[in-house]
Length: 245
Length: 304
Image 1: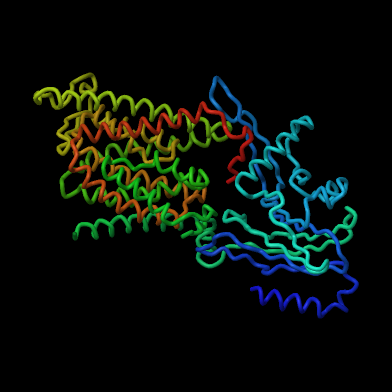
Image 2 (image 1 turned 135 degrees about the vertical axis):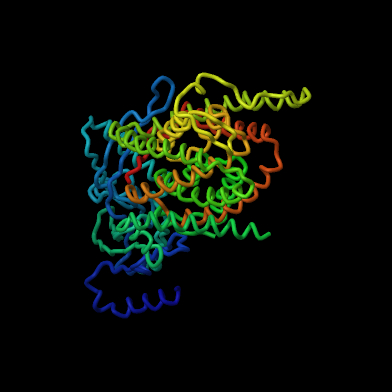
């Protein structure tokens, strides 16, 4: 893979005359993350070239999904869900890599405008509440997602070589959601965003995994009967095997 | 070795899953319980989403109970007639239970209600069993065996519709097992389990069946209840993961054979005492969970 990368980088540099107008040129090592039976997470290499030295932030964002949050409270000493809040369009996955900590390379106003980092993540709840309550719900969601590894603050460094070439290794966890991910590469000079590029990344189940998932969701009754049949068979075979001994 | 589970949408260790299956299988073979009350919390603990844990464990319980019943059958330990009457009550009960389930879901407190039912049933059933079996074990150790009546006679035996259950050596009203099946059916639909740990003590203490017949008969009944649950879960909620179920199955069918042999070697009283301790233990753990402060008061809900 390193060789392929070297070739890709060389190709990038060779096309320098074409790229001269671009401040930034970036790509990822693979555009499809295939979830197979042995899926154990995925490593994505984001690499590219800069026209002139700059600071970099790479953001990986999963498809937006509905997230339901509960707040627990005590009722007569017992912990129960006392309130619920829905976020209809929360990113299912969010991680970023940067060449230095965000507050050192990005202007705070710029960071808010670009919604960079977990602090400024774009999370709109559907319910109504006072602003500070909403902020609590929002932070609660971020913490809950961080606990299961789906929101990651500064997941990896971005390494810049000679001020021109950059690369960053990002890891997707095993519980990664499926769908179209967007990888945004931002470059900053004096804290201000001067260029950006978006690269799509498909994460999808393939082969047996995809087949089973589709049957389970599209032919549910058939799937249920099949599951029952397999269980009956396994039980019977097990009995036969053990009786012989 | 990791394996990706297509419906649960998560990667888990193969050996861990086989081990959990094996453990539940041993319990199932020994005590005649499906083990759902233990497997569901265990699966959730290792990261399987709760609805998938509930749906999938029902699927794996089918295989365990089939091989369990087949092991008990030649020993004459299955009372088919009793099983059918219990099952009739159970199917009506679980259908009503599913209606109650969706009604509670609209009220938005299903998690808490399920937890509460777990705690109360495990707690009360477990402590009753513990008291009874503890007393029995103690009595056996102290005195020479005293001749006891086959079972106590009380108002239950005055009910109409009497039926003879040869294998269980009982002549009682069919209404009693029907009612037992019905109540267990409601509870097991709500808890998403086969209901073995509820029906086993009910058979011993309410119906007065001999322990030897109880295990085979409860497993016989559980086959059909778990088939019902598996189908409904797969059809309505798409929460049955066959890959996960198969791994649990391989572990549990082997475990069940070991459990059956172990169970045959142990005294009925000792067996009951062990089951009682296990049930009480899980009940206590769940009670503690109910009262202890969560890591974070904000938690992600299930958006299935």
